[in-house]
Image (cartoon, rainbow, N blue to C red; front, top):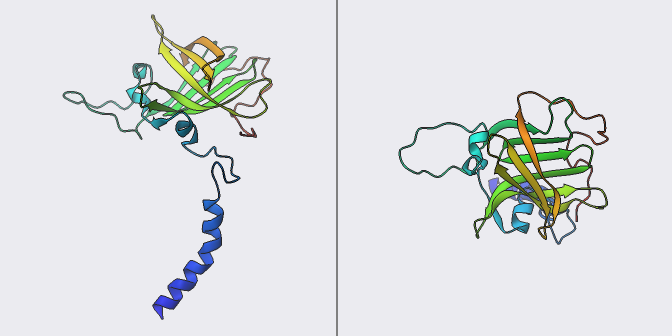
Length: 195
């Protein structure tokens, strides 16, 4: 009796499993699920707390004797970066190991995840939208520390062409006031279509 009941339960789950299995690139889905941008660039998820600029983030502090790897799931508490806290045109939010960049006046937006390729390229891998770009497109966001404090951000498309930057940003301790030129929503890539 138990065997028959279990078979019936699996039978009702079959349509749901077929629908879920149909998502992804090449089968009619958007192909933009979690990790797809990393796969596109041949990268693996990594913790942003292992980045060269991790000292500028809010990473968990641990006392370790000798070198120790940082867990890929570990990351920073929410940190915001702006060009001008009184009238921000460029805002970057780093949360755990994910990033959202919004260039208010330029209409450029990027969302991605920190990762590393087999060749050792470490940066944010994700998607951007920009004026003249019909659909969200794969791109990378490179971040470097700037002497004297702050970070420099440079957004590139999949071919390595510069889309934005490099722009110099300072850390913001509170939500910035957006520039009056802002005509985009603060949530990156909402409603965007994907290739």
